[in-house]
Image (tube, rainbow, N blue to C red):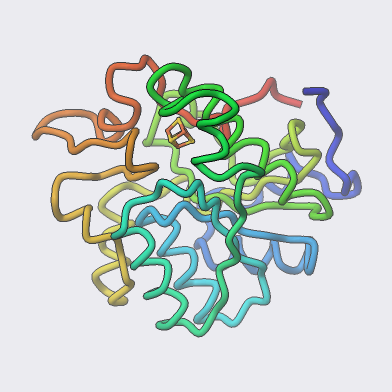
Length: 239
Ligand code: SF4
């Protein structure tokens, strides 16, 4: 894919990132809403962090578009959480779906592509739909935290995302795992019940397993495949 400059070049990303570092997540969301307005969207994968951001956005009545990538193979518990969040906060979380259903993909690429080529499957079911969904937006919010993976360790509050030509805003980037869960419990935020059953990080059902005590939180994602990112948040060269 060809890199693209952010569609809002007047936003000075470096100074904004420095000014917002350490600010409350709600203040970062308010800044993003002011700067990017109706051209701002939030792609949630329904992790605890995403639920926290939906809680903050909805309670502050920020008019930010919300969507999720429905790969067609999410856990039933994730679909239940999706409905619970919409009901609790009175919001709509749009479904962004791949071009092909699971059955159509099986005809084209063979069954259970995730077992043979997870990168290709993620490209078809996550990255390509995300790329299409982000067309027309100038900025996107993500729920990533620096502590989650080595790839995310250098993420900043505001970044250029050259893959999509967007300003990328990461309001929880400096939060710890405990801070996320303190917010969830203090505000009675709906969360995926699989978290209570040994799944700290939850993606598609075929590619997510429970983790043992002492394992890394993302050890259950693509277990044994030598992969820990779906390609949505790969760190690009700084610019
Ligand atoms: S996480 Fe697994 S099932 Fe989901 S898109 Fe990626 S490879 Fe396919």
